[in-house]
Length: 176
Image (cartoon, rainbow, N blue to C red; front, top):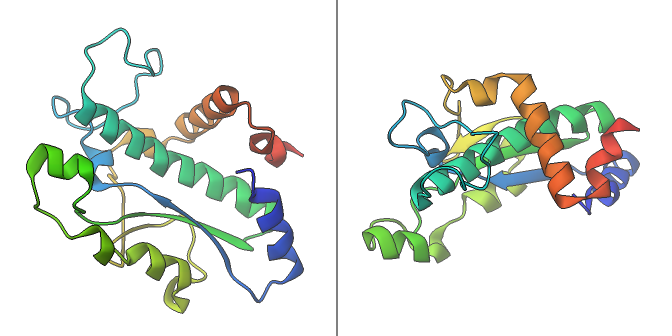
């Protein structure tokens, strides 16, 4: 978000050039806690100090937070730049990252073959789409049953927590 003022200025100065923000999430946003029906953020224990830590749950929660952050950023950016910048998120697929290899072995695609991020950032097919979640180059709904994504109060709460945690002045640019 430190580059956001520059991106916004470029978007407003040259509307013909499409500016895009792409956040990488994962299908794991829907099942970060395998013991519950859907992934939810425990607002009172963000650092998992009060409950047993699970790397699987933490990963899923971080991906849920990324989808929520994307939705809120889209809302605020649409208001600030009148849609000159699109904001989307995607699941890059099952990629043989170090984490995947350590936990399950080679069951995905090689890192060098991942290109959906490039497609989403350059394709004319999606240049005017914003606030969308993509899987395999198709627009999908993130876990619709998850109230964390659907309730604007949760998006606001996450945004405010992130602004406080990072002390990033750019997070407050939307209030001007």
